[in-house]
Image 1: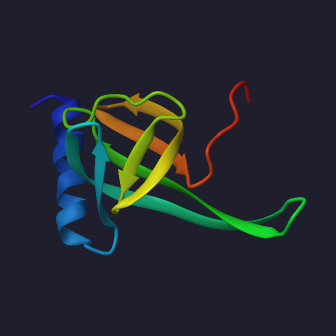
Image 2: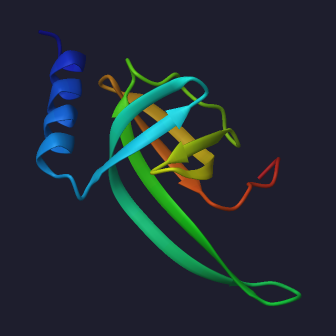
Length: 106
């Protein structure tokens, strides 16, 4: 078994043993069980009022989900979010997302 397969198996094991971290991730027609490793709720003040955004990081198997582009819509736990960044290493995709649509060129 290669390192990628071992890491994917370990991620699946963590997701099954820790249901509080386990989350469904959907991208296009692909669905995978991932592990949410970070959730950060922030308040932002704009011209009209205080609004909130949620930022998070989820890890999924690279064998289950194609690499999404920055700004792509994905669903994490049934909530549509926007991809801020995606890194792939050791057979895992680390997807950073937010509930606020990113501004192009940033």
